[in-house]
Amino acid sequence: MGEHLKPPLAQIPPTVAAVADYEPLARERMSAPAWAWLQGGAADEITLRENRAAFERLRLAPRVLAELASGHTRLTLLGQPLDHPLLVAPMASHGLAHPDGELATVLAAAAMRTPVVVSTQAGTPLETLAQAAGDAAPPVPLWFQLYLQPDRGFTRALVQRAEAAGYRALVLTVDAPVSGARNTEQRAGFVPPPGLGAVNLQGARPLRPHTARPGQPPLFGSPLLDAAPTWRDIAWLREQTVLPIVLKGVLAPADAVRAADEGLAGVIVSNHGGRVLDTVPATLEALPAIAQAVQGRLPLLLDGGVRRGTDVFKALALGASAVLVGRPVLHGLAAAGAPGVAHVLHLLRTELEMAMALCGCRTLADIDASRLWRG
Image (tube, rainbow, N blue to C red; front, side, top):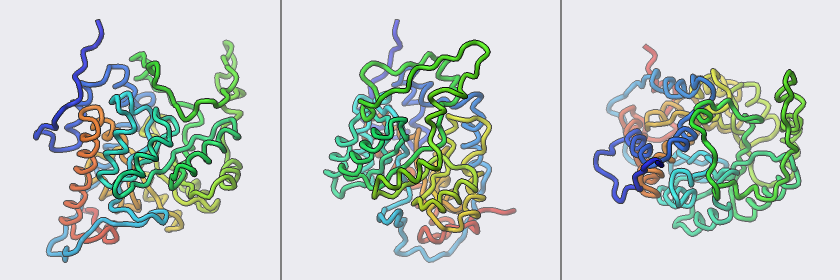
């Protein structure tokens, strides 16, 4: 007998007071394999847990009697004015969470004036999402997350589609030349359901199949690693587009410095939500050394483990300009569709403003390491 799943909520209950409250509601509305895909991490999921634990270890230093009149959370990022430092992270297959998929996410984010980074592996055409974002009042900026395809001609065409559709930046994910050992997914038997494919990749030439014989290297020498992107491809990509390029998946200060040297527009400090290589540091732990190394040469963003407005505050205090929110968005989507996504983003923004007020920060520029407890 199949798993009995609850339908999306018609109304968000008043007991949903924090982003975490959406998680059990989402679990009741997703199949066990889909839930394993969403929640799971790589291998023993140590990094997955550390992304949260790092935020929980860090303490804030409140300040009192600060001037807070005319306070705001506005910023400019990649030359784009934003109302607040929250973005929706690129995630594949929103249709696993809700039938309306990425379209519901984009419409909700537009209502909350939140930019969305649309995944290469989205289940909705990039042009459809751009049209929805453009029809919002005011329009919400979309960025396009890109995996460099082995077929560079197809990659060029994909970038041109994003440009033509009005996307405002490219987010190049570079930390997953191979997939991680996602044992939770494997144990749950996750297989993408029919009709929920990466529509933006239709027509791409696949790599030739590779199966290692017993005793032979499973990966090295395979077409997958032979076609893996390198820094040379960064220079090639810059020649193909006028859009700013943000490098996603950086944990090493040297790589962030190289990104600045290569003329990239920004870096996202990310460990892929703990889904690729296990036992790497939490992103919040990696952020300070990267900020110290780049010395403001390019903006830093962060994802991984953001569940509270205080998490956003802590990331900004350690050198980030903005954060990207991943799994909680899909929790809200699974639980209540577009209203759930909008509520998740509203809760995070509200909690950020609370933290700013209670730490004596009138604007984002006031948030620095002095607002972290060093007892």
